[in-house]
Length: 295
Image (cartoon, rainbow, N blue to C red; front, top):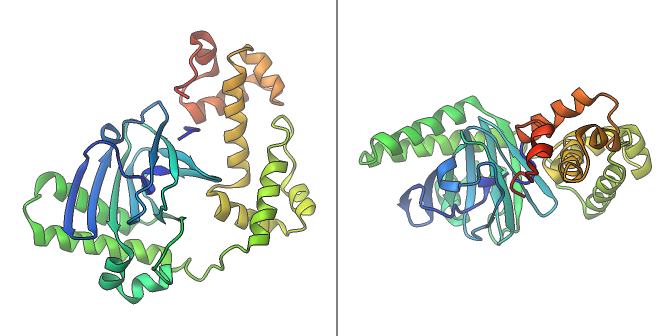
């Protein structure tokens, strides 16, 4: 939906959203589209270097980039991560709302013990990481309760803390099934970077997954699994995002038909639908107004 835009996932918002401190090193932050102010334009923020962020997207779409990672979340998605000062480029829709429980590694360990250890392993001296657990209905429901309490009953501290701990439990539970996943080796990371480069070499004619796997000497399953773990999205999803990014650039100099043909489309309506899916408007509007969609 949005190209140059993951994450509230690890970002300290620039304005002053609703934040509650339960104890030193333990914050709850409810961020809306108004707070982050990245509707229909790209914003850059730095990670905070201090907190683990346990996020639940309450509504809307949120997308972004940090380093080689492509970030894309929708309603109900859970993310977990730690930033060591990286810069995030983010964008979201007008309905965006996110609940983030932010804890230092030491506080999380003291609160959750083995529940946290089984997900995170050692929590000292973290480097950047970002994980995604998809949608967990119980976590989303508990996050919604926390957000509602922040808005309607901020003075009920015990009730609020209880609701936050329930969210923490369900959030960690959603990741426990993934905790045994072996981390990518340095060699695999290099091969996946090569796969990404090959994938994006010709945006008019993508290689098949079988061709990519053969070129990298990996099975198709390992390639698809590793690609999602390394870049935060599927192979076709990343290709299509980059393809639409290039379409946006080409539309500053070419008409819609020319742009579609240059990117390998034989059906103009298919191109228009793909462009609208990513940017929320038809390519003819970009061409007609000269808009660069805020990038």
